[in-house]
Each structure stands twice: as structure tokens, then as C-alpha cells.
Length: 268
Image 1 (tube, one colour):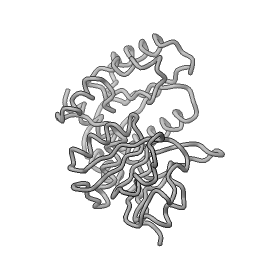
Image 2 (image 1 turned 90 degrees about the horizontal axis):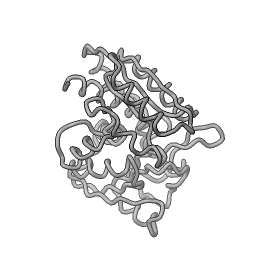
Image 3 (image 1 turned 120 degrees about the vertical axis):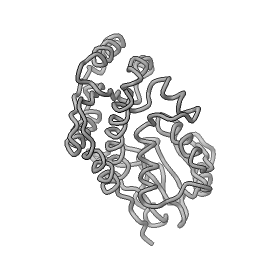
Image 4 (image 1 turned 90 degrees about the vertical axis):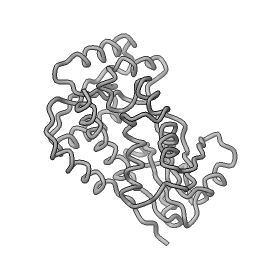
């Protein structure tokens, strides 16, 4: 058996097509550390923006910069005349945890501020985080229903927690696990849809899935210079469907960032 592969590019292209039909002024500003993985992501984001005619501007800080330097940088960007939205690197070390709330809520493209998170928790309308949104958009694109399904989310961070809330809103039954969950493979095998967002290369192997499991890989690690996900290649021999890494959730996430940018600009 060979699993169906869920590629993100065709799903992302549908989003870009809609964005190209909307006139947009302003730029997306990204703020993060001068580190290879973040710079690689912003480079990909810049190329994605070109597909829909949206400019990106990147600000890279030293990895040992003082918290106040980051906070002042965010404040400064939010005052720039051409800044339509701000994207802040996540997750950040504890010392920078106050950074997200320096983003003006009307410029928060990734649902990072306390105000945006509270609105999501209450089920109010508004922006949702890009990566969890991308997971759901990818499933929708391939006509994989969430309603009534048992979803196991492995990961309790900036992707796993909001994704659980968003899937509950779509009438899924959600179990949230993590790397310390007892007998994790057995729990995962109960899933109709298994989403891994831990950033642990090869965490999910064939013992975690059945022939009916749909697997969405959100993890990203660099191993021997190559991007790999949480899901080991052997899973493809067992499960029903699996997203690719790279090329699965990532392209859709970038498209959703620009979709969110357009939404907040229209709401101003």
C-alpha cells in the first residue's frame, strides 16, 4: 500500500489566485533573528508574496539582542507608513515573550497578540494563526472532512493548541498529546486524522498509524542539511494519506499569511 500524498502547492495556488484579484497596497514586515532557518522561511515568504503582488520587508535581529531592542523594533515597524502587517518569529525564547503584544492588533497577521488569541478562544470572528489554518485548508482542499472525526494532535505549542480549538469549532473530537504522553503510539493509532507539530524528526513511525489514518506533518527539522518532518518515510507504506515535507503544509501557510494580511487591511 502507498499513501495518497497531500501536496500544498495546488491548495496554495487557489488562495493566491483570489489574492491576485484584490488590489492591495502596503507591505508585510517580518521580524526575527539572523538565523538560517528563519531567513530561509522569510526568503520563501518573499517569493510567495511575489505570486500575489504583495511586498515583504525583513528585519533580522542578533540572536543575543536585548529584549528592549526587539520591543523597540516592533514598535518602530508598527509606525511605518507602508506597514500593513507584522509577522514575528515563533516560538521565541522566554525572555522575549512580551514581544507579541507589542504588535498593533490591527497588524497582527498570525494571531499572536493576547487580544487575537482571546477572540479565537471565544469563537469570535477574526484572524486565525496561519499554520493551524493551513492544516485545515489542506484537509478541506482534499475533501477530508473534520466533522465527527477523531483528531489526535501531537504538540502543545504555538501550532498544537490553536489547532485543537479550531478543529473543535469544525466539530471534530480532539485529543492533544505531546512527547511525554504515555504510550503515544497507541493513542495516535485511535486517530482518524493525526497531526504532528513537535519538530522532532522521525517521531511518527508506522507504529503510530493504521491503514485508515490521514497524517498531516507540520514538523520541520534540518537533518544533514535537508528539511525533514516529524513523520518517518515508512508511514507512507501504511496510512491512507500523508502530507509531504517539504511541500505540504508550508506552502499553504505562506499563502494564508498573505490572505490574513488582506483581511486585516480591509478591516482597518
